[in-house]
Image (cartoon, rainbow, N blue to C red; front, side):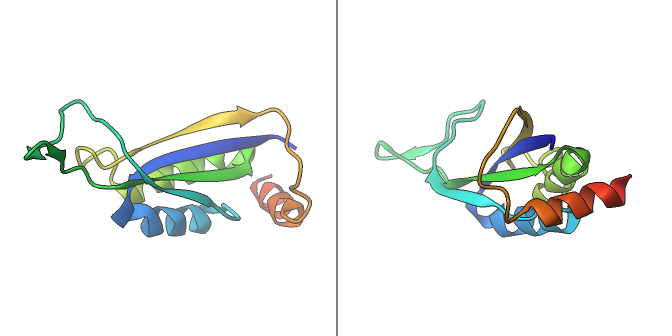
Length: 116
């Protein structure tokens, strides 16, 4: 099976919307790594030397390759990545092999068959 890993770096308040959009597009699950910090083009403001940066999440989706682009586009739209500065970024990486996916396989195969 051909798979992609979609990685979304989003502000904490947009995580639920991004996950919901990905599920609607065919993602079968997500892994969330919370409370990470990112640096954009412009440094964040500080107060007495303390950074006032919002917490971000890393959201990982392992998806069927046939659905990856649609899921990525839905994530982009839900997170408003192209319209709001600092809203987040998402990208996909090809996965050569994976184990532990047997419980997800029926759902992934159904999605691929629906695409064909």
